[in-house]
Image (cartoon, rainbow, N blue to C red; front, side, top):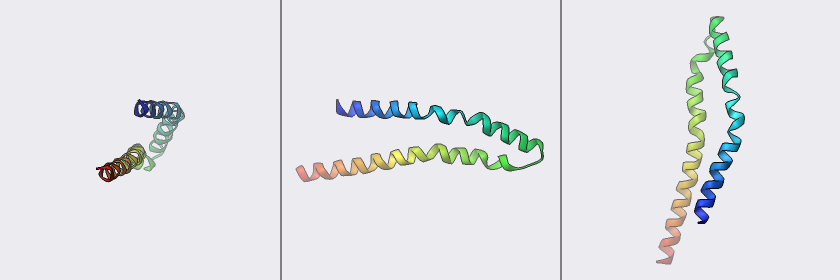
Length: 80
Protein backbone atom coordinates (compact mmCIF):
# COMPACT_ATOMS: atom_id res chain seq x y z
CA UNK A 1 0.00 0.00 0.00
CA UNK A 2 2.83 2.39 0.81
CA UNK A 3 4.45 1.78 -2.59
CA UNK A 4 1.20 2.66 -4.36
CA UNK A 5 0.99 5.93 -2.44
CA UNK A 6 4.56 6.83 -3.40
CA UNK A 7 3.90 6.09 -7.08
CA UNK A 8 0.64 8.04 -7.02
CA UNK A 9 2.30 11.01 -5.31
CA UNK A 10 5.18 10.96 -7.80
CA UNK A 11 2.85 10.88 -10.80
CA UNK A 12 0.74 13.67 -9.35
CA UNK A 13 3.85 15.76 -8.75
CA UNK A 14 5.06 15.19 -12.32
CA UNK A 15 1.71 16.27 -13.78
CA UNK A 16 1.52 19.37 -11.60
CA UNK A 17 5.05 20.52 -12.40
CA UNK A 18 4.93 19.78 -16.13
CA UNK A 19 2.26 22.38 -16.96
CA UNK A 20 4.83 25.21 -17.09
CA UNK A 21 7.04 23.23 -19.45
CA UNK A 22 4.40 22.99 -22.16
CA UNK A 23 4.20 26.77 -22.37
CA UNK A 24 7.71 26.98 -23.82
CA UNK A 25 7.04 24.94 -26.98
CA UNK A 26 5.35 27.73 -29.02
CA UNK A 27 8.16 30.12 -28.12
CA UNK A 28 10.82 27.73 -29.36
CA UNK A 29 8.88 27.07 -32.55
CA UNK A 30 8.48 30.77 -33.31
CA UNK A 31 12.17 31.42 -32.65
CA UNK A 32 13.28 28.63 -34.97
CA UNK A 33 10.87 29.67 -37.71
CA UNK A 34 12.02 33.27 -37.60
CA UNK A 35 15.66 32.19 -37.50
CA UNK A 36 15.26 29.96 -40.57
CA UNK A 37 13.39 32.72 -42.39
CA UNK A 38 16.38 35.02 -41.82
CA UNK A 39 18.79 32.35 -43.11
CA UNK A 40 20.06 31.25 -39.68
CA UNK A 41 20.94 27.73 -38.56
CA UNK A 42 20.04 27.95 -34.86
CA UNK A 43 17.25 25.40 -35.21
CA UNK A 44 19.41 22.58 -36.55
CA UNK A 45 20.48 21.45 -33.10
CA UNK A 46 17.14 22.09 -31.45
CA UNK A 47 15.79 18.57 -31.94
CA UNK A 48 18.86 17.00 -30.38
CA UNK A 49 18.63 19.43 -27.46
CA UNK A 50 14.98 18.54 -26.94
CA UNK A 51 15.87 14.84 -26.89
CA UNK A 52 18.56 15.46 -24.26
CA UNK A 53 16.13 17.39 -22.09
CA UNK A 54 13.51 14.70 -22.56
CA UNK A 55 15.87 11.86 -21.62
CA UNK A 56 17.45 13.50 -18.56
CA UNK A 57 14.54 12.89 -16.13
CA UNK A 58 14.33 9.26 -17.20
CA UNK A 59 18.02 8.79 -16.45
CA UNK A 60 17.62 10.39 -13.03
CA UNK A 61 14.58 8.27 -12.15
CA UNK A 62 16.32 5.18 -13.53
CA UNK A 63 19.40 5.90 -11.39
CA UNK A 64 17.28 6.33 -8.28
CA UNK A 65 15.37 3.13 -9.04
CA UNK A 66 18.64 1.24 -9.57
CA UNK A 67 20.07 2.49 -6.27
CA UNK A 68 16.83 1.56 -4.50
CA UNK A 69 16.84 -1.92 -6.06
CA UNK A 70 20.49 -2.49 -5.19
CA UNK A 71 19.94 -1.32 -1.59
CA UNK A 72 16.87 -3.52 -1.22
CA UNK A 73 18.73 -6.51 -2.62
CA UNK A 74 21.57 -5.94 -0.12
CA UNK A 75 19.10 -5.69 2.77
CA UNK A 76 17.43 -8.95 1.73
CA UNK A 77 20.83 -10.66 1.54
CA UNK A 78 21.62 -9.50 5.10
CA UNK A 79 18.31 -10.89 6.38
CA UNK A 80 18.82 -14.28 4.74
